[in-house]
Image 1 (cartoon, rainbow, N blue to C red):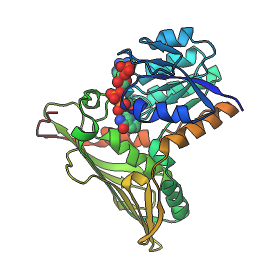
Image 2: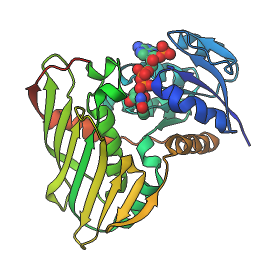
Image 3: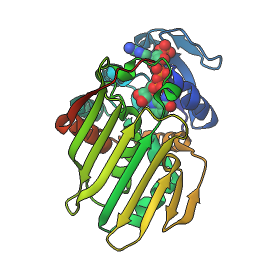
Image 4: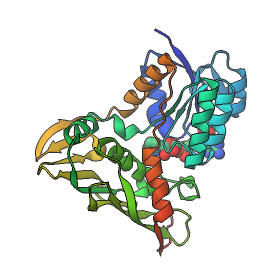
Length: 312
Ligand code: NAP
């Protein structure tokens, strides 16, 4: 068994909630370093830096880094990491644009290093079972409803509203990563409406009309960051064959024709690090751009509508 010596860059919410504990609990990884602009230093990290470049240059035998910063700076950091001979785990969204991601894919290939686009919502058992159930069927209806309270989930995070922060697509891309995983054929955006607060650069809500080669009409996604009270992360699918399924609670629970098939606490990041371990061990990359492409397309074909200003 090879232990991968890993460093984390950016010690914000997701690094604390998931990356640190999950790396600690996986014996195939050793947390050796962190880089935090604010100087946060977990006691079990042997090396701590405020500048990730120093981490890349100074930590002996560092195999890989997990980049847990906002997406706007991910490409620059990932590029430098690959050029320094490190493999790279990219938090979602993997970059600020599709062309940045393609640059990283090619660079990783040239450098002979692993690059891994992580889509955490795909690592639920219910998502895998939904994919199996839908394989080979034609989809008649898709309804994605992803509505949550931005003040609760993103307190004080200003990068989500800046260009390249993606606004409501920061959570919406999780839903789209489930859609691209379970749908039996490619999905694309026909129309989109992006509701942008008067004082912000990114949308607070979006309505998407999707299509496949076979179905043009009843495939919809509704994303909204203004939902208070109960939060909704549901995906409903109906097939031409007549059966339907519903993924609820962000893809952790699956009902097929009203029968509960999977109901599990999410272990998404455990799955991500198991996959990263496997990729590092065999020396391969995994770059899945499909969810990111749908977001890019929504911005490309979407109609922008100004809505009430949003204050934190
Ligand atoms: P966050 O709490 O704002 O943390 C991001 C951290 O990155 C900051 O605290 C800062 O940490 C570092 N950072 C900020 N600007 C930087 C810059 N210009 N250069 C280098 N480092 C910088 O955000 P988050 O919620 O953890 O989200 C980070 C990424 O994870 C996003 O892409 C998000 O979509 C994804 N994600 C988040 C969640 C979630 O539940 N929050 C879930 C899944 C995925 P230091 O001061 O320590 O450097």
